[in-house]
Image (cartoon, rainbow, N blue to C red):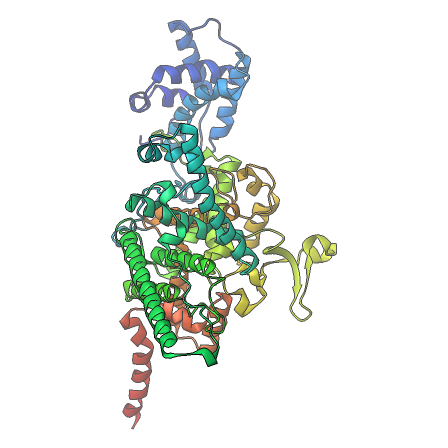
Length: 617
């Protein structure tokens, strides 16, 4: 179309429009009946438009001019008005007619010449899943999904296997036997949970994770070794053997026979411990090489951690603290620790030399694209050929806003462990007000004088028990920078909108919540969900925009690598490492992914400067 048409009549009757859309009869009804009724405020008689009525209505379209200021939403409001005049008084009843009318109005709008201002606006209205870069060429580890073999406290589940073993027992007796066996197992697991909570002061989340790992291991053992539920005895799978012979005798009564007998008993006991320990390690190897064959080394380390903790509980009344304060006298625990060290070494070797698929600049680029999405009020709907500027609901805006804030917090400041963001709680770990670093006093925004409220800042505040290395680094305060984006907006604008304008509450099932980030599908906070949900959410954001599943852990690696490439001083690196809650040495060992060339860059630059001195002589 070289020139824009002056009225809606020419657009509606043009061959380009009539041939480019489907369901033209539905669009005819929407425009000629409901739209013109709303525009002229006069209904058309009859259930269906006659040929003469159609001709009459088409002529009325010549009275409606079209120019650069054509407003789709205004014309759709006339369709809604016309629907109401015909008794369609609910959104559901008029939804289809408005959708059909939108197809025509989108065609008109897209046919108009785009001014420079219009081009800016068109670029600003972005599709939700439009990629900004393609990282799909980088190899990624696929997350395997193993069969769910976790041991469950469901007596009826084991009735069939007990019937084969005890055919003479009634069904109720079989249920009782299954219940009794499960009770013994789960009594031990519950005691283990109490032990970890009361003695080791761990969080319920950590304890529950350990128990799930142990239950999955025992579920596999039962299936692998073909045990019935009454044969599944925890202390037989994980051998519990007292390494001490309590055979006391006075020195005056010692003789050669006693010493010989004692040495024999000690040798037999040591042989038994070695034999049982080797047997268990072989069983653990089978578990890793079969059930967990496709999982990461890091996941296997977590299994070792859980089994070490559980074995410590089983031996807590046996170990002699005089022989070692961390179960050094228990061979099985020492062997599990050695096994874990080898896995951790393998884990480091797996990642050695791998260049991160993103630079920090690219992660910032992703965050800024999310900001554009958070700024939108309209968005494409790919379901129609001519459909542009669909108005977003508050729920949709909330989804964009949350994605931006979450990735922004992880990218615009030194990236913390994912637990910090996952468990952010407004008023506790994310606070708003004024903190005095000299007096260590914090005043919440709602307790400040009116003239001071505008000076309020956002802080991340963590107590020692609220982050992994809290015992080492203590209470932590970090002021979130109010970044100026250069377009009149600031980072605090988005935080304020999220926390105070109801966007967060739109996603939450229970309405108002103190949790900062919410799972959109379930309405449950990430804080109260399985921790894997948070990692999956972060990965999905990056995959949607880059075709790469970037994890929270990788974001920490990217930031540390970026810092090391800058060539900062040791004091500067130590300060940033403190903000990230680890040591400079840990940053280099675990998170730094510099290539050999990047590691040499600073040294090569230094030597060039040194060698340039010869030219002056």
